[in-house]
Image (cartoon, rainbow, N blue to C red):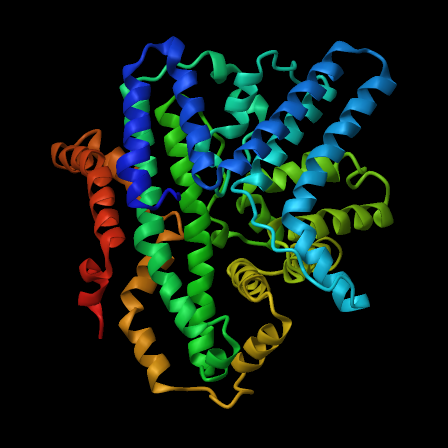
Length: 473
């Protein structure tokens, strides 16, 4: 069950939110916990046991760390936590990768195990790790209630694509939340924007990406350069709209029930450097690696060699975290190269305006590395972009696809910027002293959630209602 499905929207979310808002406050955590466990069990009941088990390991280790003052004992239980959770993550997420690599190098094993990846394991593993590490650092107290820690680790709002919510962020809100109707409205508005991003824009540009920048080598070999360039651009738009949409929906659902999750995306395609891009992209993941890997390793305090070593470690792990394939590691190390170049060579020498173009170019190529797990298909994509395939530079079929979707692409590009935020701020300022603009602002506040949900519903039930079809050339 995913957020952008009619089942989730009209059955699961409607029922769980309805029950949550109707019951007494003392039962609301129970409603949230039961709803979250049902959500996880929907993807496979056996994997619910994994979530319960990892949470219990973290619960027990944190209690032991909190109760003892002996450094050796604290380190022992911290080690148990790290080995236990990271070991389980490695087994379920990376066994096929390690086995296939070993098979390629040695011919053993004969068969690659087919392991289904449990829903949200990367996110709740990192959340639980951050919780126990913070207890170890004495930044938070250990949670005495297993059910409350399980609520923290299992909240269905943010299990699919983040944000990675730290225990510190919601520690007080687990026990003490007060939800007003203004919070419910703000949550619904944020959720509806995320739903429209996903159902209307991300899903639509994904079709363009799959058509023009196919992951099928045979199809790709017949796509001309112009098609591949626009296909990769569509994928670039898709992946931001997709990831940020899920974060919007998570933040919105959390707000509806009194949780204030931190922002996870801050218009990364408006960045002025690669470093700035990673301050804006998947902020919760970047801050996790910074606070729990980079800084403990020494950060930039040990000289150039130590700094480079720490950066290699962080970006190798960042790439590996995104998927069980070596292209993701290559993607992470690709960004490492540009971050080092910016620190030691480029610095701030690129003029304003050109720095944005430089950043977008680096990110554009990065998404090619991210998209293609097969190295042969990756090479064919890069060759095809410069006309070194049988399809050449131009094709009428690809050009027709581009023209037919040009309005969609423009809207998607605008959605990746903060233009709508600035427009709303200007409207809000104008509404203070002008009745006409006040009316417009009131209508905007009232109708945007309804419009976003309505158009999302139309897209979810089928392309026959796709309004972009009326803008085709």
